[in-house]
Length: 187
Image (cartoon, rainbow, N blue to C red):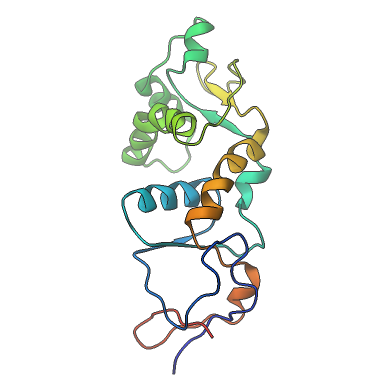
């Protein structure tokens, strides 16, 4: 028995029109928050056909309502404030406060935080405040703030997402089922 996705109102924000009866995507991203849209953008830049599945009626997920803070070691804001910081120091801070320790994941986060933060500026044109905010149990102040909280980040994704990625809206997922091969089908 084939599983289905409803076709009604599935393309809020997409430019490709209505979905065909069957379509194959190279990458399926679930969720249109900052992480989901960043993954979709990079996959699209690499030439993949991408679909972002979002349960809400618009993009943003919880990212759009976040305070818009990011803990990033080695930012220009820290340098301007005379704060010395590096990924190893952030790693040690996070290891002290985590209840469930995954050192390899924490290392991945801390070693890539600055490049990821810079990506938001270079790729998306995100505006971060000039200061360094809060310490939240870090040994140094390293949290940078978005100029317009979470909306500041998500608004930078919107022009790209609406032109490059198919984003079905919430009603598309009632009911959602799969066929025997686990492929999603829609009517």
